[in-house]
Structures are given as structure tokens and as C-alpha cells.
Length: 172
Image (cartoon, rainbow, N blue to C red; front, side, top):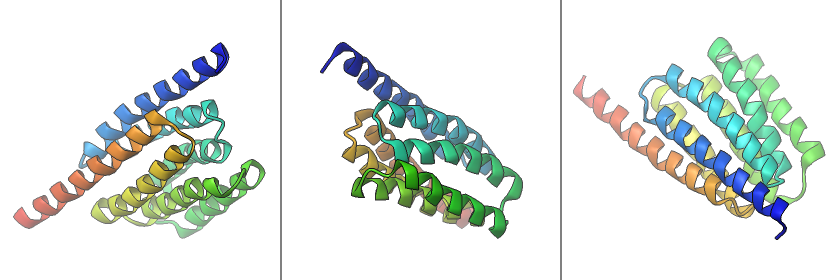
């Protein structure tokens, strides 16, 4: 590995860890609006991470997720806007597609889009947990230690928050 490749690898790991911190804070929150804001910034970091690891489909989808989060905050529940983001997610994958490993990032983008636009609370978090699982696989396939750790912890944090929301619902 050359010095540049080592630096690129380290930068990818650093962006993954930054995203990790932002996502854990977001998924630990019971407030959807706070979750969305933190996820917006986390996906900027994830996009840079995937660029460093030369995973172009994942980088493009993570960048598109920044737009998706912004639109969800404004157009929650609007099927037409969701459909536009689903189409855009597929379209950004076409020129950046490198092989079967990219299906995981695409699946994560599609599942997360539906969950964020059409669901709230527990239902939304279940689909975001499924999307996180797909991101774990995507990160494993590109050998991203930081990204894999980030998404695995996001998945666990999300499941814990789902349990907290169920508990809160039972006590009301």
C-alpha cells in the first residue's frame, strides 16, 4: 500500500467514525426531527467515506440521502416526492455500478427512502434498521472497518430505541 493509499484508507475510516458518532446520537433520540438532522450530517460523512474507499454507488446514494432527508422533512408522506427519490436512487446507481456488491447500497437507499417518507416512529425505525443491515453488508464488502462498525452500532442503537418506544407506548 502506498502512502497515498494509506492516507486515503485512514481518511475513509475517520469519516466513518464521524458518521458513527452522529448516527448513534440520532438514533438514540426519540424525536424524529432530531434524528433527521443528525442523519443529514452523518450521510455527508458516509459519502466522503465511500469516496475514500472508491465505492461509487454507495457514495452516490449516501450523497442522495442528504437530499432525501431534506425533502422528507418538508414533504413527509408525499408519495410523488418519494417516488422521485426512489427513481433518482436507481439512476445514480447506473453510471457508478461496479458489480453485485453494489446491490446492498442500492437496497439500503430504496428501503430507507420508503421508511423515511411513508412511516414514522417505530415503523420508520424498523425499515431504517433493515437499511442499516444492508449498509453493514455494503461496508463489509468494501472492507470498511469504520463504516461496518458505524452501521452495526447504528443497527443496535436503532433496535434499542425501538424497544424504548415500545416500552413508552405500553406505559401511556
